Image 1 (cartoon, rainbow, N blue to C red):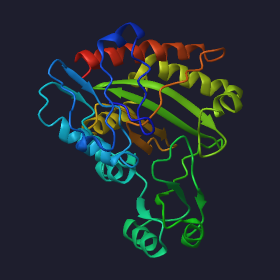
Image 2: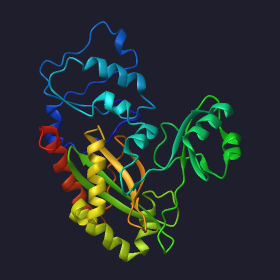
Image 3: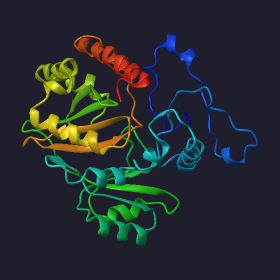
Length: 303
């Protein structure tokens, strides 16, 4: 059930299988529709409406609509509604070996912002972003509360996340993305940057200049979670147990002291594009692994 903005990536579905699926769109006025579709001949529902900040109404409609459904539901709408940045931070807090930065959610009014910042115990600097924004889009790295108050808009809701400096001794930052398909994890990438806001363009700008980091990414991509340090595997296993979602991604880094630094974990993450040209040819394995894991999840073997 896709809803445009705020959805997950379904392009791993092999083209030959697409005719086996019915695409159902749930609009905001779904409850007022006189005639609703029947799921009598449907065995599995894959919910692709995955951003609870952008689509709470649609997710609520989907949750009610699926209450009587007897088949499998991948990414229950109710579970997605509980996967906002602040709720996931609360859910994963307390895992030994995982650093979960404090996060506050508030409407852009100074009084509300100040109260939320105080309640969350945010220490500065902190990252300000609008709710529903992804792909590294932020309002900025705020030096203090005054900087936050100077830019917030009363008509907009925000997240303020405490900034944790996880750079290595050489002064580089990195970000690992893992997709979970049921219980099966696929290492999507390990990017490196000279800036804390690590994203895809850094592959050709920074990573290409560091063969030692290319080797690490290759090892993780080809070997999967099993190629990571045992302590990292243990933490990821605990994250998987606590997360109520079936199909989602997690972004994190491994800090110099071996702990994991959580960036985010949710179902609104993109698997594509995959850069598999030299020297990143090993990334082709990501497609093979991801397609197989996605297919296994759909037929019940990855849950």
